Length: 491
RNA sequence: GGCGCUAUGGUCAAGAGGCUAAGACGUCGCCCUCUCAAGGCGAAAUCACGGGUUCGAUUCCCGUUAGCGCUACCA
Image (cartoon, rainbow, N blue to C red; front, top):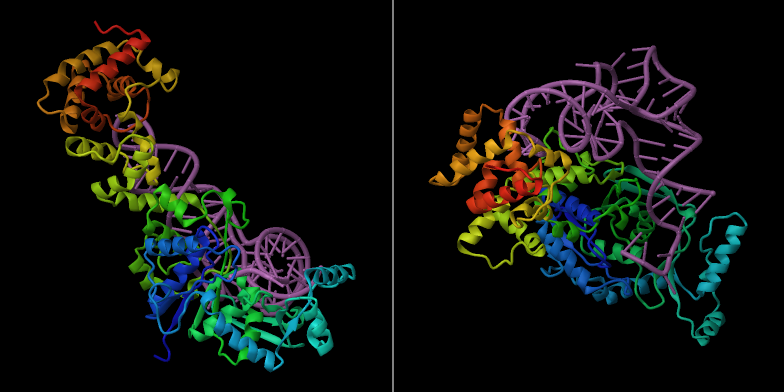
């Protein structure tokens, strides 16, 4: 297909998969799906020092977890492979030789020290520090001399002077750069590995990428890449530079802003649908006022011309709100599974429970479903079901038990509860109502003492759901203990 | 320093020459309610600044300021 849209996501496997990378991937994926095109996954591992297979695996796992599949690339193959840059070295080499032969690139034998000295000199003169093309015209003798010294050359691209470079960008419009502001840059490092700006062009061209959607930090590099496209006679793709995600203090997201990797959010119990939904809304807005979108809906609604130009601050509150929305929609079992690892971690369950015990656990966990933002919050929310030892939250709570109507209420409760045929929500509720009626007390005077005696706390889940889960014996003993602690006599 | 991008409430944002400047998160208040959460209703809160262009600028142009990015043998 001649006009097929082909986009790529090309991460560097140099660490935990960042939430910003996930957003770039998402925009590419949405655009590809929307246009009925293809998504290619390529691994840019030319930084030998920092790249690792481990983070490559991490990236692939995260993409899958987020529901983004790719049509071509790593693991799935395709006609334009290999899809790992370190496996494409011979391809780059061919083009480098061509550039060298045509005089569009040259060997540079400068050492780091020489480069640094040049930079310092330029700065001292108040000029822009950039490579001045010292090795552009080396004589054969000089080259021999350098070789004899054992110097390993880099290959630099010869940047043409006085050229206006136009970058056509889907989100920023046309951006013009002046080639005079760009020094001859390295395209092949002294170890023979191509640099990012070089490899990316060859790969995108050879993989027939039609739209390059990536983070804004690459915009300033794009003119360099355009120069290479031209030098190699490749057709340029359409670019789309999406804004960066910033932390709360408006600086680039980093560790001190809390969780920044996709995996951290997964581990905290965020749902992939929620992350996708949230990320999509960061820098893109639908036509409608809708806030909650499934992936299918996003595909349907997505459009690159509704992508915002300005950077977006990562708002954890909104993520929490969206995640809570999706959490509430889970089934009882799904929610239990989501909470399970966190319950195990806290030692509340072993993961081996079955039978009545399992059902009880599911019921307990289910009490947290409506008001928790992410799964890691579940254990704290249900901790009271796992220990009968508790302290009073504060003196206010303690004072609730000192009210003179308390003994009467508790006596009636202890009288009625054991007589119930089944101890469930409705029957417990009915019991409370009956006590209210007999004592002519307001609801608060009935519920609050029971709540505090039962939990030590003035806040918490509904009593009618709590009592059945605790069971008769624990309910009675917890209340007795609390009354003893504050010295209230029942009879 | 140079180049580039950006600038609507605390945050995400709609808007695309004339509007009471949407909506959402968050905040606050009220309702519901034993409490919390959820839910319902409501409120406060925004066009960075200065010049133009125009009958009229949040919207177009220029400048200033601020933030960010690039200026690497990192991507």
